Length: 330
Ligand SMILES: NC(=O)c1ccc[n+]([C@@H]2O[C@H](COP(=O)([O-])OP(=O)(O)OC[C@H]3O[C@@H](n4cnc5c(N)ncnc54)[C@H](OP(=O)(O)O)[C@@H]3O)[C@@H](O)[C@H]2O)c1
Image (cartoon, rainbow, N blue to C red; front, top):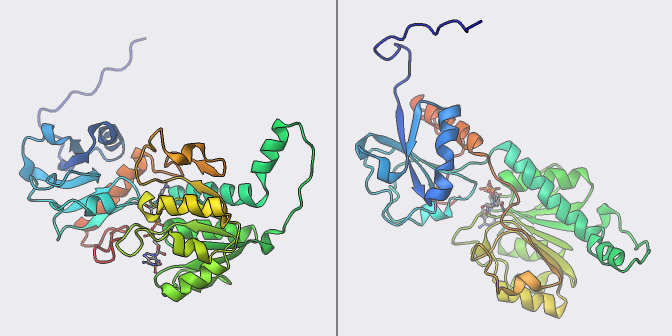
């Protein structure tokens, strides 16, 4: 039996159809075009286009951006919102044409933070429970139970207690690690976790970190924070888990710290140059674990949901939930 015929189409737009909201995609077209379909599904009133396809730049009221060019924002005089497609915004803040008076938001949903918590916890366990040694034992068909330490005896230092750091902290506390946290304000720490702030606080946290995890945002204050001075303050044989931003780390200092035994191993997910160049020393270092900036991310549909919610917030006179503090840089 043939299906029922569709209802007759009216000639004009239905009365309750929302007015389209025009957005522009700024950044590498290969990355940015994946968001067009997601917005069509999740927030169909948002019509996204690459700059070449924008016919009326004045009608564009929001921009979705990732590493935009220096002049990319200039063509759009009526922006109400700029959003990153991820948690980081340093690439957007680096564009001189970014208007200073437009709210800038990032994507920092709970599912992304949980994915980060799982990723970092896996690395903590990998190093604490010596899975690298077990892997090489297996290759040698060697059976040996290695000595164990309770999680409560492993001192973990976490740099950053924001969306990502907070989720990591809760996961490590649940596993009973001896956690301490370094942040700017010392706020939002899980109950019972010691907080450190300021330069002296960073020194003290380093001195009690068998495993140091970096989840700071990249700002003028944190660029290069993972350096020889900090490594010299860690207990001998400490481990670094670096999932913040590549520019936090002075890469040569890490190699020296590993060679001297100050650090025994490092898990690295982010790099100053990405993709990591084929000739880079990190690829073949036997005590470095490399992953391709893949600790966690948001799906295009999560991005569309968060941006659509922020546009609704703006319409209602509220600040978007994930608005970035431009002064602080995160
Ligand atoms: N590898 C990946 O796949 C991946 C995925 C997502 C995010 N990330 C990265 O993870 C990092 C954290 O993201 P997030 O969303 O958790 O950031 P966030 O919510 O903005 O939190 C930042 C945290 O860092 C602290 N902080 C900022 N500046 C500081 C300073 N100068 N000294 C000490 N503490 C400082 C803040 O202190 P207050 O609490 O006092 O504000 C806050 O606790 C970012 O670098 C982001 O790019 C990586």
